[in-house]
Amino acid sequence: MLSAGQSAPTFSLPDADMEPVSLDSFAGKNNIVLYFYPRDDTPGCTIEAIDFSDLEDEFAKHDCVVLGISRDDCISHAAFRDKHGLSIRLLADPDGEVCEQYGVCQLREVNGVKRESLVRSTFVINKQGIVCHALYAVNPRGHAAAIAGLVRNLERGGKNLSHGKR
Image (cartoon, rainbow, N blue to C red; front, side):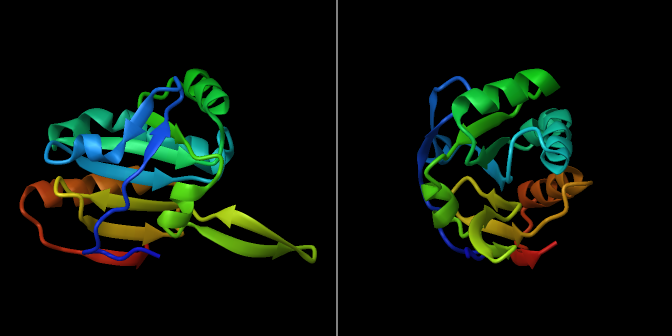
């Protein structure tokens, strides 16, 4: 698991249009909200993605880009985006390499079978590439608004670094 104060692991992943998105491309220019979600078009993930999209202008006011990552592929992301009119960029990590780097995968046992699952998590990363907030096992309802508050504080020079559940 990552903690506040650590450098954010860099990566390059394709978005829903199969265009590569590199975390490094935002360095020095944008704060980043990087949120990980379990699966496209499921109830909680849909709520979260719509809420982040609805607040995209608010994030932009604070030089912040919102990126969502799941293990779904680009085609699934495009269908999810188009079905719900999402404006945020959704990145595909089908091999789970970036999910592993950010510590959002965990083994769960269901009916005696161990399976790896993705824990809904969000990271607020400043323009210098430092994780300012690392939130694991978040509730999707109202989460985007809470993250918008953290980003506003970050832009006001807030030095609060947090981690853990929220």
